[in-house]
Image 1 (cartoon, rainbow, N blue to C red):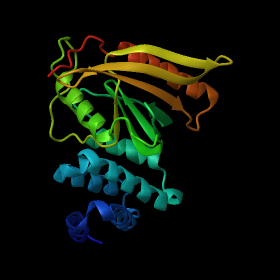
Image 2 (cartoon, rainbow, N blue to C red):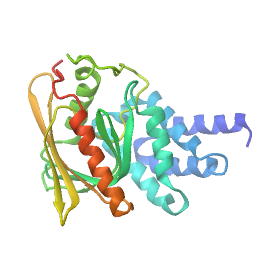
Image 3 (tube, one colour):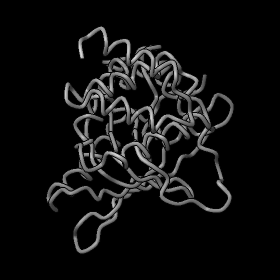
Image 4 (cartoon, rainbow, N blue to C red):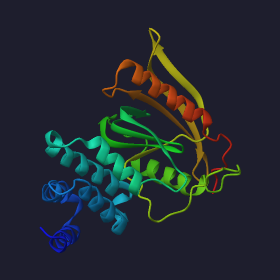
Length: 254
């Protein structure tokens, strides 16, 4: 397939894609490009979401993540996702001045909702690409609320910080907020729980504002990636260090 044919194929798929058929279209695109360069698929995904940001809003975003996870299950035996998802995050999902510090497989619990997947820790937030493991029969806070709350915080609150940050995040229309977003700014009550001297989980609270009221986001994180014991211990310690170094007096009120 020459470049013109591939470009035409990808353009056609973008036009045909809908929330309900995303996993199938993702599979078709991946199968077409996997022998050329698998990164082409993630460029297709990134460009699609830049062109159609509606897929990143509220319930649409939740359904998008489910369709993406369904697609991954269809291809799980044929691909190593870690390096490719990291490529996607770095190219499409990181603000200017934001740095990816750590990535691993883990679980994050917020209230009665538990998320499972690949975790990306930056100097300003946590991104999780994965699925909901379990939830109570009544979701206490709809994901869309959390999404818009954090979008407001990351785009406006940090930019309006009263602190003199050496590297400022820049407002950018070219940044995709893909994946479940969790704040780490204003981190407090950091609690690294250990068992027999080894860290087993990390809990903390992030204090943010949605422009009207203050929100306390209490999170619990567990690392269970296929790292050796020393690797997991170092990962927990690095997260504690990031939480401790993240600004704690940011004015997140719009």
